[in-house]
Image 1 (cartoon, rainbow, N blue to C red):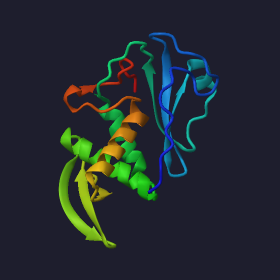
Image 2: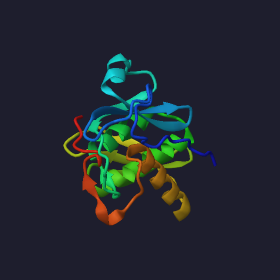
Image 3: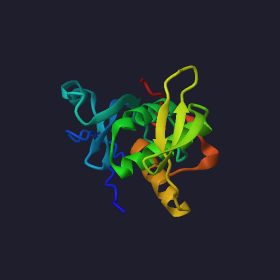
Image 4: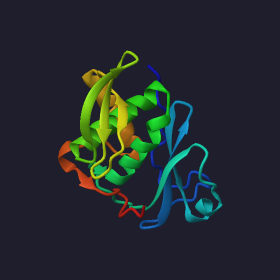
Length: 180
C-alpha cells in the first residue's frame, strides 16, 4: 500500500516562505505529483507569478486565521471540483480518493446514484449531479474500516490540515470564507 506525502498547511507561502498574518488572503491549490495529492498555499505576490495548469487540479482563495477551530469544515464546492478533476486519473490511489469523495458528496446530496454496473472486472457506481444529465462512473472499493479512516484523514489533511470530527461539520474553509 503506497503512502501519501501530504504537506499540511503551515501558515506560510509554499514558494517564498512568507508567514501569513491573521486574516491575510492567500491562494490554496491542490496538484497531483505522481500518485500523491499535494496542497500548496501561495501569498498574493507568488500567486501573481504562478502559472496555473499543468498538474494543478483546483485552486481557491481563502484567508489565514490564527486561532482556527479544530472541527471539520467541509467545502463542498472544492470537494466537488476535486471529484470532477480526478475523473481521468488512472492511479489506484487517486481512484480511491475519488470513491471516498463520491461517498461524501452522496451523503451531502451533491451526487445521486443512478445505478450500479460491472465492467472490466470492477463494480462501478453510475452517478449524476442534481439538475445535470451527465453520468459519472466511479469505481467501487471495499475498504477495511482502518483504510477508510486513513483515507478520510489524509483527504482532510489535504483539504484543511485538521482532523475529522463528524458532529462538527460546517460549510466553508476553516480559514475564513472562500472566494471560489
